[in-house]
Image 1 (cartoon, helix red, strand yellow):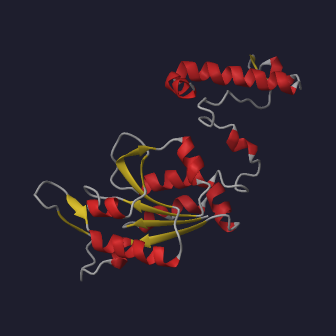
Image 2 (tube, rainbow, N blue to C red):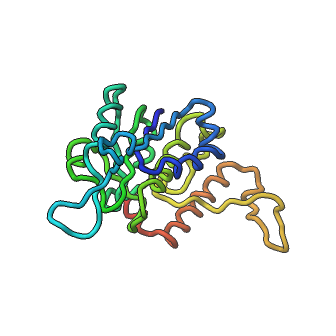
Length: 227
């Protein structure tokens, strides 16, 4: 998979891809991340990428020219399955969306700033608009990093035990069951005997029951999606 990220702050996005699973995925060439500084595409002599909005009002708007030129250049080089805009008013990111995107080959992610981007970019280039929550950040970079992490970990080969991702919270509209490791008894706090029984079916039944109980307690809204 190739992910091209359009941003005015590329330095903000370098660190998340230099560590842990994401770094190993890049080193293994399972994913290629390319950061594009939108300012370098600006025709303005001062490399400005923002301007006052028509009609007046507080806040600046990201201008159309540098973003459009960057996207057009990339589209001339390869076909993209999705051009995603990170925005607070987009569709809220859920596991099913990450699952869907993980099957794509080439993705562009545009990081918004200020009051957002010129609407014509959204109208003519963007295929998906994604939000990571009902709150506003100073820019789309952190949201883009979250989206990338949620996608890349699902690519076959990125996680050594690929079945691990399939049992994560939200994969089946259920929260994950509790997990334990050694020692089985710590200060009198004991692990369920079922987990120590070696009886795999009983263990799976216990985990399913625990996942359902935890979901009913913490996120009952998820159970509505299962109906």
